[in-house]
Image (tube, rainbow, N blue to C red):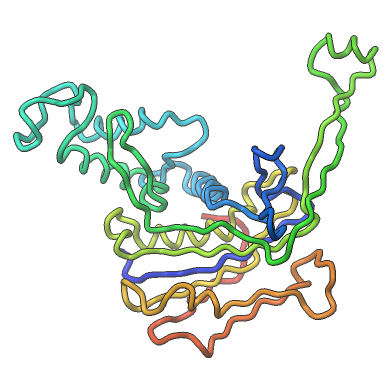
Length: 309
């Protein structure tokens, strides 16, 4: 079923004794706003986790394969779209309007690019959800995705802690000789004792109509946000959990209120008397439902359940 509504949403998640999103330019320390000390998690970090969830939940079935995944060679996948459409990129374009000859060997042109773009949208969940730049190689153009996320920011400043760790083994015989058989390797791990993060997101109905992103895709996306940490555990990330997902649904396809107005209705703050928060129950989340603009409702979400498709 085609998507008929615009959505804005607030995602609240936390981390305990883990690194939610390391910064490779800072020795993989947890990302932080240097001016305020608040923790940050990038949008692409969460999109990666949603992609991983979809791969596990749908196992690459039709319409639910993933374009940007580990070890993928993207140009080959773009070429695959042309092959599926029976477009020979070495021959003269099929339509006279696309030119009497092919401008660049191995690259689509004219209406071929649009057909390839729609084929990529129909095949890959992440392309029709988040969009993609596919103008390399065979050229399937660009897709502006209907689902967008902001950077997540922690409610309070975070504390970055570095830990020394030891591996009771070495990589080479030379390393063993240097240690006279002691055979130990020292390393470091960075964690945040506790951090509660808030992310804001948007779902555009007009862009969904362009990519074919439908109600079933949206339901899978919501499920992915709720379950992405449950199916993608890592010792380095510690204990990460989705705590709340607040969905604002607009009646009008283009929306009935500004996203910022809706986000301001949600407040997340420490409970009185809590000086050093170390758990989710140290915070309170409030929604001013009495100030909802006309045409906007809060979409209820089912109670948390075991990870499933």
